[in-house]
Length: 238
Image (cartoon, rainbow, N blue to C red; front, side):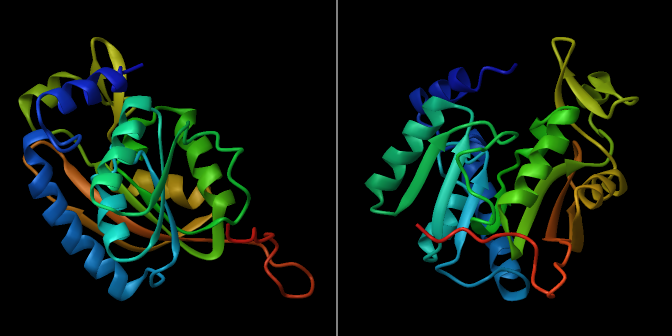
């Protein structure tokens, strides 16, 4: 498994603001444009309750949405990142709740708890059946009228380095001979999402020199109970 604690420790020591290192400001600008569009077309308005999967040190969707008045929660596998996220939000006097955890297994989150779940470029970090487990958890914790925003690498590798590390059979990038990132055609990602009982409302692709990146606005497909009400129980806001 990749040592995310070591990577976040290195980034903090070297004075970077987040996971993207020197590209962090450019990434935040791009994400701001994306978020503005998603708000106009798909997202519930603040103070809707959001969870960012793979929130890192909070300098991503969490930062942008807290600034807009959303009720922000974040989860990440790195303890270093979570501590850093709390520090960053405290320095900016922003409200956010962050905890260490595995996005594939979130029993501490009640069913139907969130209006919005944001993929903090986390899904492409998951390998094999962990992707299915994560999508099932998102479906469980998302409210019936909620929105799941998927932000993921897609397509085929373009750079020589990525091509040399690519396993085309499993759709994975390798690092030191081990699967490190999932990289699949968009149609395969859409199929995964639909198999997890979601429907894709919109999909856009950003073209890059190394591989492409997809942003998908997704809604739950839920069975109806005999009286016509949605079958999921809704947890009270806390």
